[in-house]
Image (tube, rainbow, N blue to C red):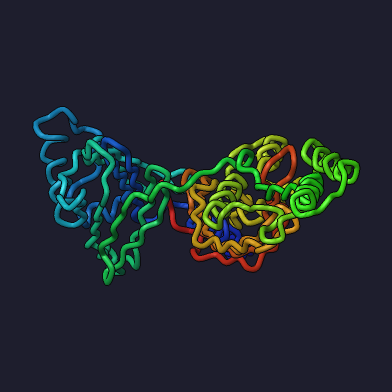
Length: 402
């Protein structure tokens, strides 16, 4: 053997280890579940590792390319066994009634982008609903694997009408229930202007007229000449248009929206901040942000949000925001405001996904901040100030999605 060959071989093996580890971090997990809820049906997509599929279904996945989807039953006996397994181990109840799934597609995904030895089975299921369900009850009962190490959790990515959720199943918590979100109040931040308390109009002429009238009625005049000045004063007091505006001491000068409307205005502005990052062109992002944020804080807010969306894996990918869910918006409306502005102490969560190397990850951040919302003439309501109190990540960022 060539001298030093063992050292060279060992060095090559050590060099290859990091790339192998990196590849392992960027492949889908053994089970990935995605659900899409629509008016007419609920679609479930399962991506299952080849070995786990064999262990659970006791079927040979390499037969899938030769199956005829038009055969008796959907996908023949193979499909019947898949449906039977799902009814027993992963049933779905729609508004209290268990619905039998219909197989829309079966895929044998041979060879993964980063590892040719990784094969998967893709199963697309349809659950007819005919209208938007008011409750979906999911159950997942299988956590055993072919290697004897049970799954700690099964994650389900659910996308609904105006909703996005991550459902987590465990052996001690195998049932998850979804209900459609209640409609949020929506107010146009450019049309709901703050009110101004109308001033009290004080007419000094009326005081003069009243004084003259009382004098004429109660006074004693020994001649018309002495009465005439009071008649003239009465006439002038009645016809003079002059008035003085006086602030009402019992009402604030500026009338802000109610606490409920103020919260709705803020949440509309706040959601639009994250909506802006759906665009790729930086100038477009700034244009959309300017519809929610005062120009003075726009650059700093852009940097803060951009950093919060950065997925700390490999190429520093930016996660796509799937949903911004308000947890609490505590509005503080001043009793006697001097400016058309109010403060909001907000708590919210942002769920996002990022796709890379042929698959994706999801992450969730929970943040708290103090905001100042202010009316700007010619523009409307805008977020004029922001002070981030804290921000924390509540997932490990490595759960795979389709």
